[in-house]
Image 1 (cartoon, rainbow, N blue to C red):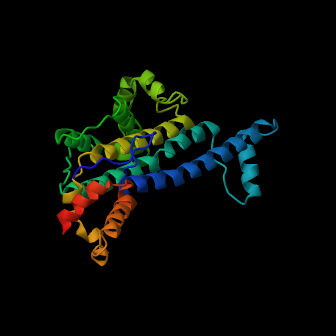
Image 2 (image 1 turned 120 degrees about the vertical axis):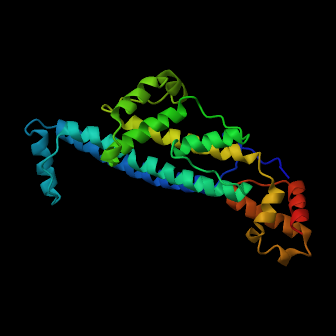
Length: 278
């Protein structure tokens, strides 16, 4: 029972996955923190530039002492360079967790496992597997390369043994910047790894969300809700309680599926599910 579902104007579907909601929540919380850090550091820089008596190091030490913080050895150039690289750590680690959770959601929906390979990244292998299994995925040509670019920058910072600067430079050189700017016209990013800006953090996060969304939406039209419900009948523990009331059963199943996957199944689809479960 592959059913027609409600649509929204923006993404043409309300369908989502538990893994995608977790990613959105984590990234939303981190976005707010990064934006706060960025705001305070810009305000601090403005305060420094509004005076002319102290060097940046002197000004930094003076302000740090007022807050009982020992901070003396930091140059503005080093700070700006590393700050934007550090911003990339959590979005990329969160997306890596999403890919693991996505594979679990996929197994729940289709009773299949997406295997992984040491010869490809998780994302590359998952996309290749889905395409090979006739799932329709419409990811922009630049999107996966852009993900790889920021992922490798993150890895080079978080894990010294994984530094691959030549590969990072090669990926950046191969990016179609015009296509990126066409998709994200308000951002100046991407920039080369030694000249990152706040826009690179925004672009990295937006691209990750876009990929996650398209992986998620690629599953929607392939779900057989009847087979899914038979395999996962434990999701409907109260169904027997409403056995004498078909209307309550239909409403109950709709609410359970909506809570987990964000969609409202049609009455016809739910009738089919009830037949398959009973």
